[in-house]
Amino acid sequence: MKWEDIEKAYGFKIMSEEKIRKISKLNTSQGAKCFKRAHTRRSYFLFVFAAVKHLIENGFTRAIAYDMTLDGDICMEDGEYIYYALPWIESRQCKFKKEDDLAEIIKLSAELHEASAGFIPPEASKPRVYYGKWPEHFEKRLKELQAFKAMIEEKKITDEFDKAYYPLIDFFADQGNGAIDLLKESSYYDISEKAGKRGEFCHHDMAEHNFIITADREMKIIDFDYCIMDTRLHDIASLVIRNMKHGTWDIAKAYFILNEYSKYSAINKEEMEVIKYFAIFPQDFWQVGLQYYVEKQPWDMQNFMSRLNKVRDDFSLRQKFLEEFLML
Image 1 (tube, helix red, strand yellow):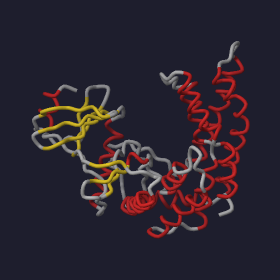
Image 2 (tube, helix red, strand yellow; image 1 turned 135 degrees about the vertical axis):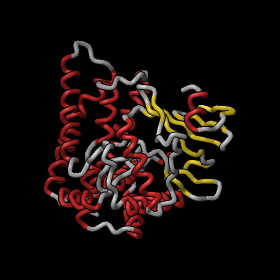
Image 3 (spheres, helix red, strand yellow; image 1 turned 120 degrees about the vertical axis):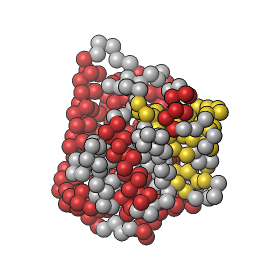
Image 4 (cartoon, one colour; image 1 turned 90 degrees about the vertical axis):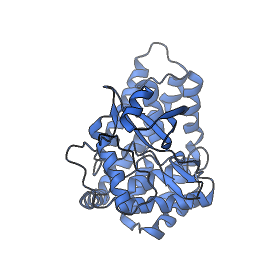
C-alpha cells in the first residue's frame, strides 16, 4: 500500500516506516501507528472490529481500538487484502515462563471473556461461529490425517518426513477419536449452547507474543485477527496447551492456570472435563502434517523435521501429562 494512499485515507503524514514481522510501524504526524495487511474478507474484519469495540464499551481496557478512516470506514482495501491501522504501543512481549506475566495473562483472559458477553455481531458481518462444532472440526482433521497417510502410501519414494510421520498417524488418530467420543458424551453441547445465548467470543490466538506490557506497566492483548464466536473454554484450553509444549508438560502449571482463572471466573466440573478433552486432541501433530502435505509451506526439510521432532520429543511427556490431567 502506497504511503500517499494511507495518508489520504487516515489524514496523517507518514515520516518513516519500519517493517516488524508482518506489520509496519508508521511514524506519523499523529504519533506512531501499527499498520497491518490482513488476508481476510471485509465482512469478517467487520466482525473483529465490532468485537473489539464491544469489549472496550463493556469496560475492558486491555484492547486497543482500531482507527477509522477520514470517511468513517473501518479499513482500506486493494481488491486482494484489507489494511487497518491502530495506535502503536511501545511495550515488551510477555513470557509464559515468568509467573507474574502468566498470572496477569490469565486475569486478562477472564476479564476479556466476561466483557465479551452480550455481543451481537453486525448484520453485515460474517463471524466464524464455533459453538458446538469442536467434534465436527476434529473429525475433519482426522479425515485429513488419513489423507496424509494415503499420500505417503501412494509414493514410490518416501522422504525423511514421510518416514518419521507415517508410523505415528494411527496412534494419534485413535487419540483424536477418543477426544471426540469424550466430548460427545460430556456436557460440551449444553455448555456451547449457553455460551451462544450469552454471546461469548474468544480471542483464539493465545500466543505469548499477543500479550504485551506497556511503558505504564499495563498488560494489553493484541491481534484479534483470529477471533471466533465460541465458548471461553476454547481460549482457556489453548492457554493450557500453549504452556505445556516443548518439554514443559507440567501438571502443576496446568493446575495453576485453571485455579488462577477460577479466581476471576469460576470453572465448574463439567467445564473442566471439556477443557481436558480438548487437550487430548493431537493438534500439533495434525498441524505439522497439514503444513507439509497440504499447505506445502516454503520451508526446507530441516525446518519441517524440527517441527515434527518437537512433537515426537514431547510424546512421552505429553502422554504422562494427559493421564495426570484427566485425573484432576
